[in-house]
Structures are given as C-alpha cells and as structure tokens.
Image (cartoon, rainbow, N blue to C red; front, side):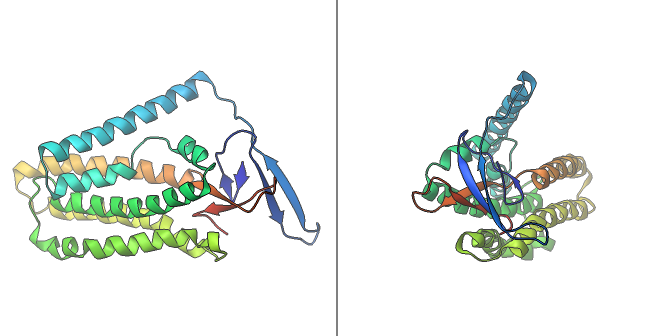
Length: 249
C-alpha cells in the first residue's frame, strides 16, 4: 500500500482512503486503496531469512560482549545494535496495525531506542578498542546523556503529523541525523587512531573499516527504505484514513 510518499506494509485486504487535493486539471477526490499480497519467489524468501538470522546473531554477539566484558564500550555497542541490525520488522509492524495504540507506543518507543542507539555508537567509538576513556574526548562522553535527550525529542517530533502538525522539517532533520552521527563516529575513530600506540592501531583500523562499510550500507538502505508504519485513525468507517508515522504530512 502506497501512502505518505512510500510503501506501507500492511495485512492483505486492509483498506485506506487517501484525500487528494484539487489541481488545475482535476478536482479534489478520494481514492480507496486495498492491500494485496505481493508476489515473492524462493530467492527473496531466502534473503529475508538470512536477514533475520544475521540480525539475531548480531544482537546475541553484542549481548555476549556485555556479559563477558561489561563496560561502557560493550554497552554502547549493544545499545546500538539493539535498534540498528539487519533484522526485518515490516511484518511485526503490519501485525501491530490491528492495535493502533500498541503501534503508536511501539513507534514512540522506537524513536527513543533509535536515539539511544546513536548515543551507544558514539560511546563505543570513544572507548574502542580497550574500553579506556580518552581524555581529549571526555567532554563529549559527559555530554552524551544530553545529546541523547535532544536526539530523542527530534525523532519524536517526526510524529507531529499524527496531531495535525506538519513534520516535514523534523523528518528531514531526523534522516540527516543518522548521516551526521555516522560521519562523527568515523571522524572520531580516525582522530583517535593517530594517537594510539602500535598495538592498538591495527585493532582500531578493523573498527574503522567495519564502521565505514557497515554504516554506509545501513544508512543507504535506511534512506531507500519505506516509512516505518501507518497509524490508522478514525471510527468505524470501513474506509480508514491513515497518517504516515515519521513521514511527510
């Protein structure tokens, strides 16, 4: 189903009515969309299965690091991969659409988890590879709680469209935030590499290459992905109007 400028994954048979404004050539009108099952071949299903397995392995690996080497570095990495991992979530959100309040709660909690993930990534790059604090960047580490609050408020502002407020600017800033955090993370690693002794230099190089490849791939995929979900609102009308969460109003 296409709503709010992107695809919305919903359960088959679900309907939505889109209000289209009048243009110079056509009057205002309503269009009712009915969700249909998209065809999928065995190869696509196999790739989706690999995504899920990779997501589980990444989260389990990060949890194992926290268990075996607890500290700010391992906790930062764990908080990051809790939200940013290869696992697919569209089926989960499609099922939650049957319970609008639960879906709204999940979206709001997801915005906070995303902000915590960004903070976790910065904390990880500040402490890698030995977990020791870096004196030059201690001011940033102390500021991370405040940064996390600001990021959470920015991401929550994306859902202003649910109450009738325009959220285009907030959504653009939220998308840009991911790129800014990724650039900052790689820049911090590069700066810290120059000051590390030889025994830590190679270890940080592996971290840098992992961030460069992984963050770039994930951000491009996130940018090209669809809006997270739709929040259905309204009464008992069979034609549901939907507002796209964290998308343009």
